[in-house]
Image (tube, rainbow, N blue to C red; front, side, top):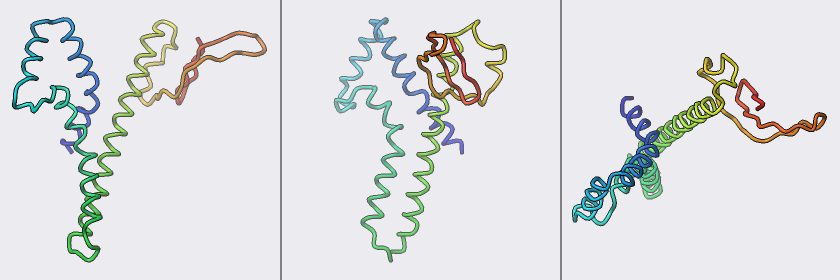
Length: 161
């Protein structure tokens, strides 16, 4: 649904937004002053702006917890019991979907970061595979040649540098 697309996008960009906000606060004293003043507003109940930014991300896990508590407190023979159990399962499915999309985006960002880092050293077709997933990176020693390499392992490719 459109809600899930927007919600997933928000979750995927949350860290980027927090990092950007921090960067702007460090470099723009006028903005930082405004930011500090706004955070002191009584309507904020002592919460900083970043506390409000995390609220949407916490919403679905809170729904799952709330619905689980409702199931625990509802007798099995109550007419709402079955619907509550189904609601818990659907919310868990939504949470899993959002988490999986977040992992995919993070993995794609990792692939792009490696691509930038190794620009000019990669095979020509490296960027051509949209299904490429990063798996692991680390140091490897070729025992017969006594040579050390740094490797990047993807689902379809192993790169030695």
